[in-house]
Image (cartoon, rainbow, N blue to C red; front, side):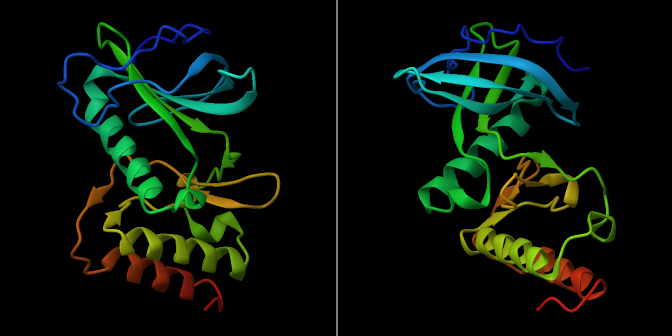
Length: 202
């Protein structure tokens, strides 16, 4: 069962101090306030909320907060690890920007704060998504880039892909991801074959 709805003002969020969650940051970025105002969905691991983040200079930006109850901290850590790996390899454009991962002081729940990159596709099949050949190429290139740094998503579906108002695509939800430098590329090959069945895209 997921945790009850978080309060609208999440400023009490703080990094875990127990050291039991090694993927969590040792200190938070200079955030002033995170306000959550709209629950987007309840997923398998987290509640997803839309809100705003006010930075230390007073700048306000739109964000998405993924709220995890304690039982799903392993998924939260996988998500955090993936975003850190993308940032380390300067592949931030493939996914939302990661602003921080925090837990409440009692570790009853935690949150991953991400940039708002638009709505995910509300479908489970690539045929239903209605993407163009160029968009399919973009997704395939993104997954290829993930594999090049040893990051395997394991759940690349339209529902884990978002398009912003400028038409930019990004991959979401790395909660099932794994890191492995050896790449048999079954995920990539399977995706390519699926796209082949839809249209000429290569």
